[in-house]
Amino acid sequence: MRLINIFKNIIVTALLLSGSFTAYAQKPYVTFNHVALMVTDANKSADFYIHWFHLADLKNPFPGRPIRWLSLGGKMQLHLIQGTKQEVTVSKDNHIAFSVLSIDHFVARLKKEHMPYEDGDGHKSKLAVRSDKVRQAYFRDPDGYLVEVNDAP
Image (cartoon, rainbow, N blue to C red; front, top):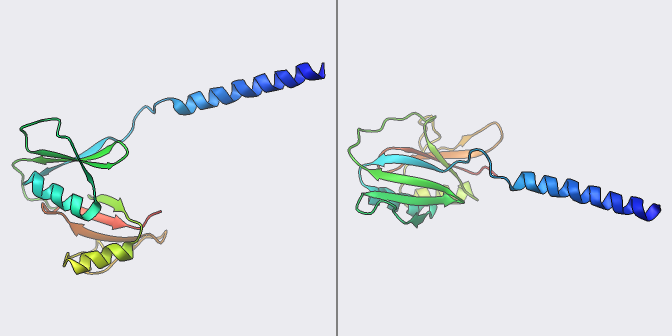
């Protein structure tokens, strides 16, 4: 009888575990895929993002069109679409953000390459510090889009 109870416990545990693994294996209803930016020169913008963030170039699924796709890691992408564009004027609340291992090293690189940056409130060569102690620097891409770099874990 004791042996039967042990087997029952093993079977119940196995069934519970297999059900929880199945729940985790299901594809989520929605996942982030990409962000697209209209730019004046797709190659110039791609060079900027590849230079500063070491993004990988992806194959353009629209041959003959001036579009560059870059990998943001995982299945996330940045699409740079060349076309007629009006001048970009954005507040700090409308931006793309990247986390880096060391904001100090990244800012040193900005300085070395004479890339102006600010804290997001217009204070040049300053970092913003959020209430959770994450430090942020903001700078602009070739089309004026605001780019945040932070040291969020």
